[in-house]
Amino acid sequence: MKKLVIFFLAFLFFNLKNTNAETIYNGTLIDAHSQVGILIKDEEVSKEINDNDVYLTLLSMRGKHENATKRYKSIKKQTQGKVRYLISTKLKGFARKKRDANKAISGIKELKRQAINSKINYVGFGEIIVQHAPHDHEKLKYEGINLNLKSYRIKKAIDIVFEDDVPIILHVELNDYEEDSKKILDQLVEIGNEHPDKNFLLMHMAQIELKEAKFIFKNTKNVHFITSHSDPYRAKNEKRKRLGKAQTGWITLFNKKENLKKKWKNLMNENPHRFVFAIDNVFDHHWKKNYKERVYFWRKALGSLNKKTASLIACGNANTYFKLEIQCK
Image 1: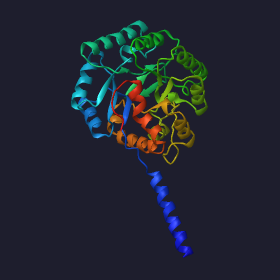
Image 2: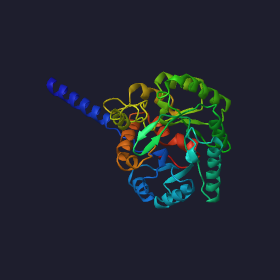
Image 3: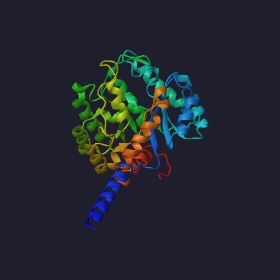
Image 4: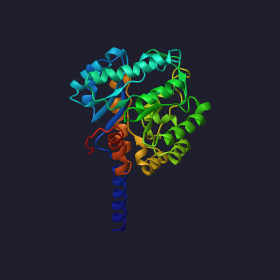
């Protein structure tokens, strides 16, 4: 009898352990920032959006300035409205340090007029590149840029976004530009407190360390993190990159078993309104090769969080900050 009880308890523990490990979040998923590059067709992007389990994707366009709204409308039609428009801030060389800042700023204004004239109900603007490491890749040759929140073109771009009641998405790289990380952190606190009615979203977790994230949370109420490119695939991919080819400062929120690290899991559960899910597909291989894998990683990760936290990160926060007016299930 005693052996039978021990066997039953062991069986119960084993099954509970495996059930918990395999818990998947099946609620509404919003990708709060992805992009359409020039090397992928509208039909290909549309197919991937239709075939993957993401309810809504907020899209920013790359490539030719004059084609931005045309491409977006094509994808919207082919996906039956599963996308919303983010006006790009990166066209006309905004993130090229040798490009005239005023011309780049005028490009953002032109894209906004283009969206309005095309009767596109845009929900915000794409990422504003503040810092970006150099790239030496067959799909992207880029000299890099290292500005800060007080730089002329950054302030001008933020002012344009301020005109609409939408989030300000910022791309900073605290690890790739470690020497300026304290300055950027202080500026994020400063701008957050100067504009308490605005929401600031930091792409790719800002390559932030845990103690720096806690510093942001302690000193601001409106500076949040976008989870893009912090999944296990990114960590695997970076191991194959040679130093100097691209960013080397990416962080991963996942451990070697491809589960959320306990420290990040705890921080998310303690601060459920401060994280926003996004994939940030850009190149053709992002859309066509690893999309399903990344969605799975995140559904599994979200399933390990408190239910309220998971729902907010997956859908609720983006729904609120971008005023999407959808029902998160």
